Length: 141
Image 1 (cartoon, rainbow, N blue to C red):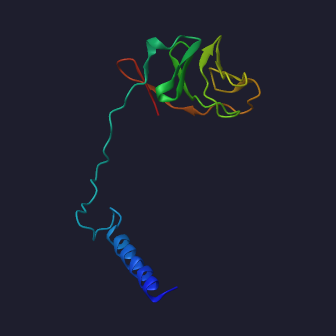
Image 2 (cartoon, rainbow, N blue to C red):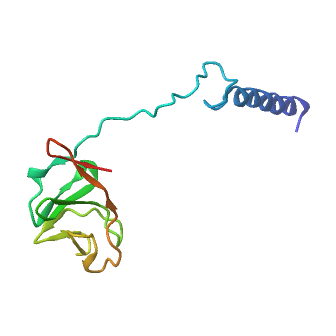
Image 3 (cartoon, rainbow, N blue to C red):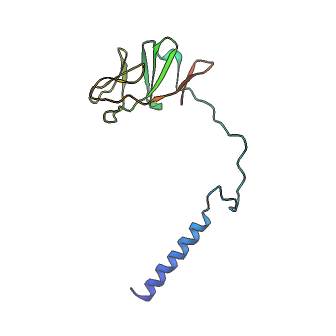
């Protein structure tokens, strides 16, 4: 390596180190523009992914945009599950005859608890908490 090339490498290292030193974390009280966090946590409004009227008793719906399956196994009892099949990760696509269906390999899951009722899947769908809002919205998470 020539002397000129070695100096170029050294200079690049100094510049990179200077840039990294200026990029302190937001929690770094010495950083310009730092302000202490609020004492109260901020909240975001809950957003309903569907309404109670959209989910049939004894069935369910797939909310693709939210990647969730909402079911109502019994009147007023709502459940929410992941749309990701536990067999090979395909998205489940429908709720038919009381079962959540994966089109890839034919796995079926219970609308009551997400457990597999027909293989090849052997693990249940991941379940999420679901809340019914005062105006009949279903909030997942």
